[in-house]
Length: 131
Image (tube, rainbow, N blue to C red; front, side):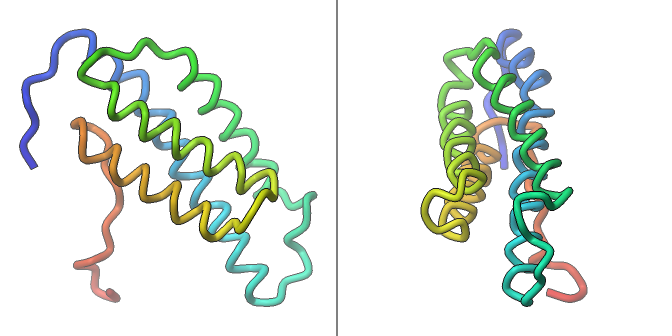
């Protein structure tokens, strides 16, 4: 994928926002792991699970950062995707609605965000040995 040249304000946005993007991916991964445990019949997936506490802390960190970051005009679409992913993950963490649907929606927003600016890569297993 080719990207247009990035101005200084957008470059600063990218540098600051990469951590929050990674945090959101990790929250999505942790929630997916908890859903797998629950689907497998684990009794240890309740509100006191350490992975849930970790996801909540990462979510709060990302939310604070994303709400305070300075967004350039070039980064607006990217930022909008991140805020949508944040909202979906927040609903999943709050047990509002179907967490699988919210998780899929959040992941789709993260994937869309990754296509709008350089430096935000999603892991792809399409060509992995076990795909």
